[in-house]
Image (cartoon, rainbow, N blue to C red; front, side, top):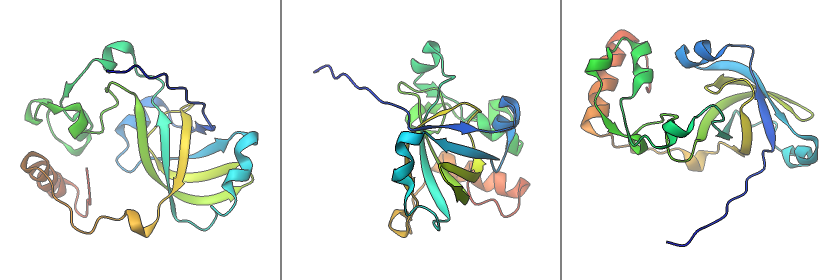
Length: 170
């Protein structure tokens, strides 16, 4: 396999007042500000008015051991009342676990306002200081109308909905 050198430069940084544990335990995410660095501010033109944006981030608190993990239990489901022993052991690529070979996060957050190079958002699931690698508008073409789920996920979702009525996703 050919070796590739990949260089990514953050375009911004996430600011949240919540501590790491509060972010981890939040069901609907936390509010915060995405600061875009001055040299990229012009790239925000036309973003205001979108209800949601997609944040691509570097999960900067991942450690080397986490990058070698390929099998995980979807532990964030504990906040829905699941016990760790109830959770299946699945491949990291079947989850949104931060333990993955390349610690890249993707989050869809609600955009509440744009003020210069500062985006006020809701629903963040990343920690204070998380580097932002990219930002994209969430547009109707990204909505999947017909979605299939594996049985293990569908059964966990059904069980979680019995605990949290109106829950749309885990």
